[in-house]
Length: 213
Image (cartoon, rainbow, N blue to C red; front, side, top):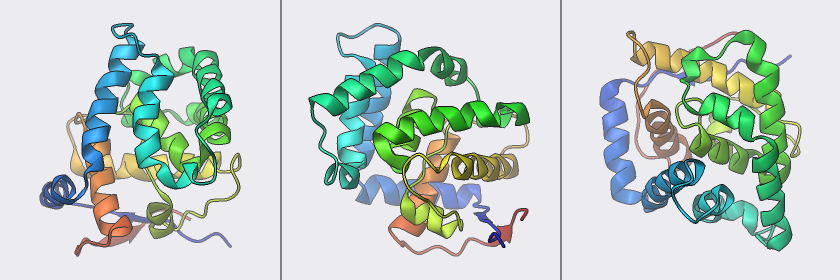
């Protein structure tokens, strides 16, 4: 029997506390802000850097564990460039949307996109890259966060359904926090909360509830 996912329902006060902790103790936030701006400029054709180069600015820092076993060499970079080129229209369709707009029939589209990225970047890198490309639609995760939510990751290329499940949980979290429409940057703030609580183990006392089976 599949374990019931656990979804944490943070308050706005807890999100603010996690942001304070994140900015104070996590130097990777600088790379996130730089990569976010670079990706936006690259997608708009306003920099000489390609989208792949802009993504690499974050992936080689935030996804460092992956690259201990998978070198970021010319072949890998070419695979990333080809991936972005082949999926550009799908990425553009999601870029300006909120996660709350995801329709049930789009699950397979999301799953296919995630699998394509996962085969090149691994499950954690895939989520991070997709988030940078569509920051209000795709949430971030890492292995400690997935364990906390009782989502078990398998081999690369097999985790699309788990990512879609995680997205449905995040939709419920967003609905809990925002009753009058999406809030810009909320997926990043939820990740800061998850990261500070589950990845780093900083002190939290948020309540937990079960969502579905």
